[in-house]
Image (cartoon, rainbow, N blue to C red):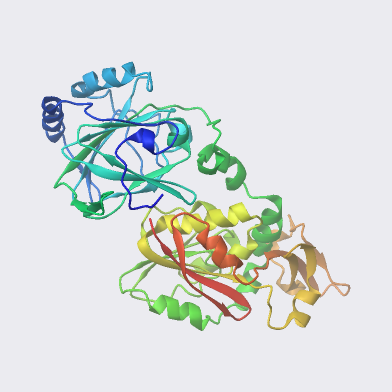
Length: 453
């Protein structure tokens, strides 16, 4: 379906579990609710005003803290909650309400409400004006007009598998090719019910429980041959990494003054002083490399790039230099890119680089590396024995060995080498990311991508 086509009835979308009921509220009920909510205190976000009732909604995790209840839902929504519960498609109480106020041009980023924090059914009532909500699942897109005083119910597949969002624009297209301006004000009441159990749904691609199980725990290969290895060699590695790649510097110099830049996998921090007029948020999986940054008076923290410790849309740009080739599966590489896209504002750009299969001197590189499988290799790092760090003597890294003359400690580093087009294809497979440039530089494939959500 064309993204520009608007459909008014939920049954036409073909999304299981999506129901739109028009005329859910009378005009008198709408006015009563608006007066009541305007009598409460609003919280100002960057582009819209919100209220939270029952539990405070945390936009960083798309959920709530179930141990921090604000109080019961306000009495003025009790008739609406009762009416929703009586619907065959709902059949449950609600104990959390988020009220959002939208003005023309302001939308909502693509998301799925966190599976494990809420039950199977969400309900959202539109007041004061209409909007167009769009739904995305992989390459599929659907658009739905939410009329004033209607209620949208999301359950099962619509709730768990489809990302929903409101495009940031001042007009919306209609089927006839015309455009209709956004109303001067729209207020949404979104009702949820808290749950505290892990999710056991049939849609693992958007399920936080499944992702936590599969992604947050480092696979053995990354723990042994990436994190622990870099912890062991950090000072020596840093001493060999002082030259900055011109292409990376060019990218950083293209960013506007005053920007916030995420350096995901910052290593020894060699790019953190490139722009004195910008703010860098630096992180690395290796505590040893973070300590090197701190010794250089850089602000850096130890964090897994697959779970970036930054808020959604908090950065103007990002770099991720020589990191993705250390990630041991396609799904985890996609997660890394998705995290970078998540922390970028809409239109923000990131540069990501990875070692290439097409090495400029393969006889001196690939031919001497230990092949694991496919394009995966162990690449040795020779650490002079006199530089072995004392802190590792009691618990030596299990991936190392000494040379015959004991002059070097040899560590294995895990790498997945990228072929031409592979990195660009990987980026474009991630919702919210769009490759805008791809090039080869110093035996690396490099992609600049833009955050589209």
